[in-house]
Structure formats: C-alpha cells, structure tokens
Length: 512
Image (cartoon, rainbow, N blue to C red):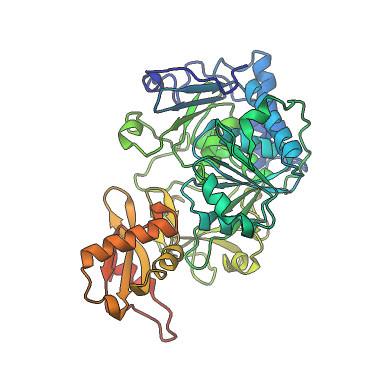
C-alpha cells in the first residue's frame, strides 16, 4: 500500500504533456454505467435517488470496477510538487485511506454526522482524503484557502460553529492565537511531520487507526459542503451544497463538457479554498472514474501550466468564440429584467436560472442562517446569478459583466467590503471604496479610492500607498490587497449617503 510514500520524478510534467495521457486516453472505453445513470438523473430522465453518498455510490463502485479489471490501469489520484516528490493512489488505496481518515474524525476528533469541519490546507494529498472522509462520515466539509488570516479563520469558526479545524504547521499559530474566542471548537487536527502541543497529528493517527468503516447513509438533500462567499456587502456568507448537488450534478459537465473517461487525467489548478477545486478536482473527474492530477506549487507559475495545451467545450457543439455556450441540464437559463420578465434575444439583462415551479437539485440549498440573503437572490421565478449577459437566437449566452461589486482577480473572488474594512482600520484612512480595475495579466485587480484623514493629507502618496497595501496584507488575506490606490477628496454617494461603487467602477472600465 503506497500510503504517503514519495519518490523522485524529475520528468513528471513531460509525461503529462503526452497527448495520450491528458484528456485523451489512448484506451477509450465505453461510458460507464455509473456516469450514464447520474447523467440521466440530471436530464430528468430518472428520479433523483432518496439516498446518495458520493463515496459509497460512486468512488466505491469505481473501486470494484478497478478490482474486477474493468477500469484501465490509471491512478485515481496523482500528486507531485516542485521538489519532484510524487504520490499515486488507486481507487482501492483512496478508499482504504479515506476510511482510516473517517475513523480518525469520528474516534480521535469525536465528530458525529452533521458536525462541521473547517479545513485550511494547501494542495496536499491530505486535503483530498479529508474531503472524502467527511463525505463517508456524513460530516460537513468547509474548505478555506491557506491565505486566510487569524481574523478570517476566527470569523469562519464562529459563523459555522465548526467543531474541528484541520490545518498545517504554517497556520497552526494563527489558530492558536484565536482559541479563546472559539467556544464551539472541540478538536484540532494538524497535517505535519512533527508533533505540536494541543494538536492531534493526522499522520501519527494513521498508524493506529483501523480502515474498517461503514459509510454513513445520507439523504440526497443532506448538507455535504459549506463554502464562504466573497460578498459585495457585509461579511462572507455561508453557501450550503447537498450530497446530490455536486455528487450527481457534475455528471453532465463531466460527460458532455469535459468528455472525461476512466483513461483520462484531469488537471485543475484551482486553490483548495475555492469551489472550483470541488467541481474539477473531486466530483467531475471521479464520477467518470478519471485520474485527478495535482501539482502543488506554493506560488502560481503560469509558465509551467501554459506548457500543457488545455481546452474544453461541450461535445459536438458549435463553438462561438467569446460565448459562454449553452445552458447545461438540468438548468434552465434565461436573461431577465429587474422585475423577473424574460427579455428578447440580443437584449442585455440579468443571467438567471429558473427555480419555480421546480428548483434544480444541483443548485446550492441556501445561504446558511441568512434567509434575507437567500431571498435577495430571487426575482420572480428566477435565481439571479449576479452576472449580466445576452442570449442570442441559438441560445448561446454572452457574458457582459458582474452586476454586483465582487472582484475576480486571477480566479480569486474578492469582496470589496473586506478590503474596505481593512483599510478603515489604518489611521490615514477617513473613507474608502474598493472596485475592480482592468489588468492585462489578472483580468481584474483591486483598486482602492481613499479619502485621507486631515492629519495625513500632506504625506508622500507613494509611501502611503505602500503602507496601506502592507496594512491590508496583514489585516486580511494577502491576495486581497489593493494593487492600485488613488487618493481622492471625496467619494460619489447617493442622497442617503451610500457610497456608489458603480460610479467608480464604470470610470475604471471606461463606461462613465
């Protein structure tokens, strides 16, 4: 059993570049009955099962196919890092290790079905074990990016009432600094080579924990994941995903968009804290029995990633450059106005999903403990995505922009409120407004418009900009800091005194 074993692989990426090893399996197999069944559920051709658990109903099925020789000799999981270390697991090994991990969560950490776990880890193999172990044990998994600060972690622990946190030795000190305010936290699990006082060590527990674990029977609507959003106003909100929403919901995209098979290798570069990691590093590839490939880079390296030519479109669909494509079943996507009326072809409006009379099962359930936010996303019979777009005569959707203020910089979604809250803590800042600004590399970057306190009006702008950027990096996650800062005399406001970010954003994007 290759449990956490590593070896040197000096040319791992050269292997990946082979056209027969990435998205193009040389041994194409007929589509498995597993993905065919769940794809038919997405297309409303079959009933949604009352009970569903991705670990037992999908992963363990692939495990059996693998043992019976009905799946190609392709690993289920393949991990490498910049030092040339490698981890490979078959579905059998993934099952064995995730069962051990599920027992660790239940026995050593004292967690029960329905409890919540906050996992703040980089792209290490243990993150995948934790995600599957939580599914097996019916525990709600809450991923967080490893760039979270102590303040960010405290907010997430308090809001979610998580009973366990899982992190590494880099972030353990930040967790320890906030422990007095974490009244719900019962267990701390660390992924590290050495021991740390007050922490359970995952790797040590593996040596003494049984792999004999019976998967919890979960209903399809039971909560499986919670993600914290980057909202445009207020603090991050908790979004709940059920066992069926991702476990079944990604069968269609896996089959018709990514066109994955058991002989393929899927590489997703998303950070583990983002929902894209769940979409494309767990559910979409594994529902098709594909191999999940992970390259652990402490820092993003576009030159490494760009060396593999990557693209995906719905199988057999005509390509319209610049279009988002067509809606994927079971979603009914429309362009609506602010009152919920469907707009004619070619007219710009809100991109929305019809949820009445029937809500697509693979959508998130709700904003947890926030009925106001849940209701605010509804307009008539539609869930409004927050994106603006146009639909052409063939049903292709064209993205125009965000209707809210969330900033998407290099794939990181950043709420302006969080940056503004950090800025206002600096004595030089009287007021601030944060918006997106165009950038040729990152698409968008964070820009802060700052009104200075009178005592700082004569300070050197360049030095003050640097001070504010460093301040934001310390107060909140470093990736959120404003790469652009403009000092202004005042900010545009409504008659009631609310700052109009839209005016500033339009100015930045040349729409004023």
